[in-house]
Length: 247
Image 1 (cartoon, rainbow, N blue to C red):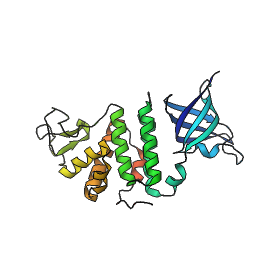
Image 2: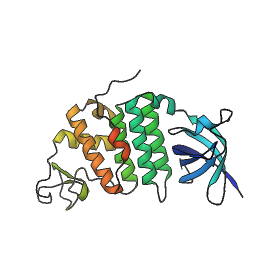
Image 3: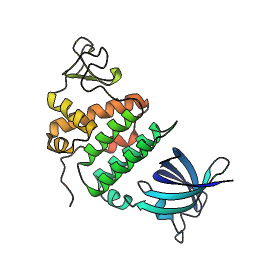
Image 4: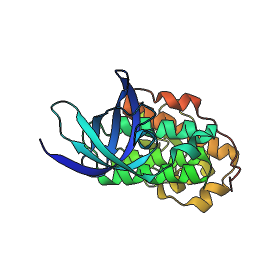
């Protein structure tokens, strides 16, 4: 059977037997993979630490019948250690890899891989508020999967904005005529922040008020979980707190 190499992000792991582990990987060229890493739970393992969640590695795999087998792993990005020691980074990273796992059930793209790597790198470096990195990731990952929220025109009738109502079930921002009775209004600052998170305009994101940031986070969480049909369990542990940059 053939072997192949690829760059991967470790999404999650499961114990197998006494010393092995099943790893779920998002790869750059082969989509989502599940593989067996033999002996990685032994202290003598050559690459066990390189196959922990949030790590980015160059791996060589042997193609098996049901599960591939990891033969080699070389570290590309050791983000796990810096993420794990900060609660806000860890919970945000957990929500990101859980969303990536769910969004790439069918077919992943290189853009999804690169987006996740960029998000984990930003978390590890403490470049922005952890929740804002997560929010931006969720919006852009949903867009890559074909579920881009409408943030200017009405999601239902296409009427040009600005509008002040966001309805996850209808696809984003909607006008007054299309908004369901009782739908919550969204402030202009929150709408602008959503647009900045989607575009990666970090100066605007970092300058947003705590109220707008919290409101945007709630809308993004509702939107992502509506389209994924099952809740992202890790989101319940994510805290929304003002950013104090780690230097």
